[in-house]
Amino acid sequence: MFIMSKNKKVLVALSGGIDSSAAAFLLKKKGYEVSAVFMRFWKETKEENKCCSAELEAQAKKVCQKLEIPFYVFDFRKEFKKWVVDDFLRAYKKGLTPNPCVVCNEKIKIGLLLKKARAMGFDFLATGHYARIWEDKNGFHLGVARDLRKDQSYFLYRLSRDDIKYLLFPLGEYLKSEVKEIVKKSKIPAKLAVESQEICFVPGGDIASFLKQTLIRETAEDSPPLFSGGLSSAGLKRGEIVDSNGKKLGIHSGLSLYTLGQRRGIGLSGGPFYVLKKDFKKNQLVVTKDKKELYRDEFFVGPLFWHAPRAKKAAEVLVKTRSTDKFRKAKVIFQKNKTKVVLKNPCFAPTPGQSAVFYKDTRKKPKEVLGGGIILTNG
Image 1 (cartoon, rainbow, N blue to C red):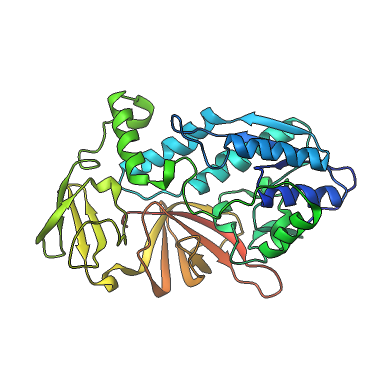
Image 2 (cartoon, one colour):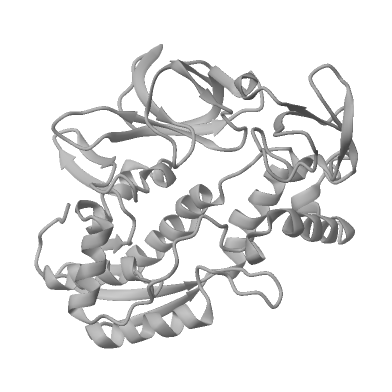
């Protein structure tokens, strides 16, 4: 949804890729006074961050020259390291499997950038996210994109309604194929990047190697903010792989390097095996051949982010436990320090550290984001 008002100033987060470039193009075409900003994030030594490489920065500058709009560069490396990378490492240290994109959107790509944009006098911040915003008598709402295969509302559930009213998502009503065609016809020099599910700051997408090197280095440097209390003794120590009955099957490389439901990379013959549990007290990785053991019909989340008016005790919702998951019917039961989620049908391995995002099913409007929370290790 565009809030039509001539000469409104909008700052576009521009990565140099086709999505953000198309967003800038569409906004200018609608009559907005458009400026663009490229953000620099933290990167591992000698490695490029895939979201903000030197090549992409140069590409973003070319896009701005083509569109004849001002171009800024913001250095968010310190903030990114503190709020995204360190949070990622803390979560793995605790045996969780975090989703850093959720934190990055909340803290950096929208949170920090929106504050900067407003301080600079911009009326709106726009991004290339595939999601939709609309306003009615009850205020502003966030919902899924028209292109459900590209929808990114899952990663935006922590945004408040106060934030949403200053945001524009120009691509929410477009299919990805239509966005590509817009860029092609307009001859915008955007980079057609290969779609990737990898974490931008992890070199080569090798999370295990990144964790081993970074956690060991951080521990050696005795970083108080990140590792107060010391590194979990089981986190990076080798230990036994056992089945549900405690039978030893092999040796694991460190519990922090595995995730619930994982099938590949366990290193056992005669499988497939799935990671069923990480027992940090015994430093044991518990696996199973029976995939059915990983299905759950209830789990807990916390803390809860909830943006819509809510019932006192419970609410019927749709939920996604992964960004690529399907919508599932569920009941959210509000409790004092945590929230219980009861599924109509069991789902595979709701993973501690990942987000469960709740939606309201509507017929006339897009499915609306109600809120969400981090899946807890146990009740």
